[in-house]
Length: 323
Ligand code: NDP
Image (cartoon, rainbow, N blue to C red; front, side, top):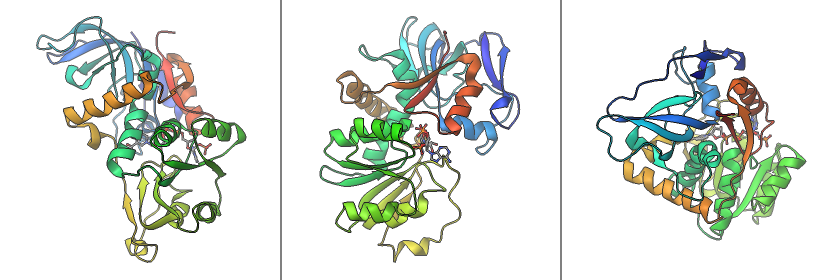
């Protein structure tokens, strides 16, 4: 089969197209013909070695495809099932194996490309709204990178729940997309973001800030948060936040900071299924209009990483493995 391997830690050029044998499923696994492999920021952190990884390996923690074989002990999945996964794996390949119980059947009405490119971001948006923090109707929240994969889903979902969303973006095109997802106010990044957020909230600031940008936005996130509010630092697209003196949270307004990761919100099977059901239902009933922003061919995985890292993407990014 054709697959992409990370040959060494480094830039996108370390992603190599290789020929490998089709893997054999273990007794609790399914073998999947991959249709869509999600391309996520975490894939770039692992490729660089910023998060631990051991080259050579096939990257890709998210995807969708069709079950083509099942291990001896698998009863819950059958050949022909359309499934998606988002808890790790080796998705940048024509075939992959995955523990059957960690795959999710894709319901009717949900496209493979949407499931394979957006399940990880969708479940992230879900736990950000129902896990890391709990904004409710009538609240105003700040979402950085509002036109990104997580940003668009988070904005649309929050708006559907009656939450007013302020976003930050870097361009006019991204502003239009963020507004189309429901953002009430769209700001450009800068040293005055917090001041503008306070102007838009009668001086109070927002009870929740969702910050997946990190290094370049975190100080503004702190300054934009209302008394007793929560900063949810869920990523570092611009780099890691430098060491932070927790004592500062006191004069800033008795603030809370959390640094969550999806794995801890989907490790319990029932919770995983609940979050997935809510995401797939929201996609199928049109609450979420998830579009795949960019689809690259498998052999163009390096281009996909370059696009993601250089802010040239909108919404979700994925590889069309069958192209
Ligand atoms: P996005 O599609 O949001 O892409 C990142 C966006 O961040 C860019 O498009 C860009 O938007 C913005 N950005 C601002 N500064 C930079 C920079 N210096 N370099 C690159 N991008 C920058 O990515 P995802 O939706 O896949 O992920 C968003 C964040 O969420 C990432 O940090 C990711 O690691 C994190 N994440 C965390 C999870 C968790 O459980 N903790 C799970 C999933 C994702 P603009 O041009 O508008 O600034």
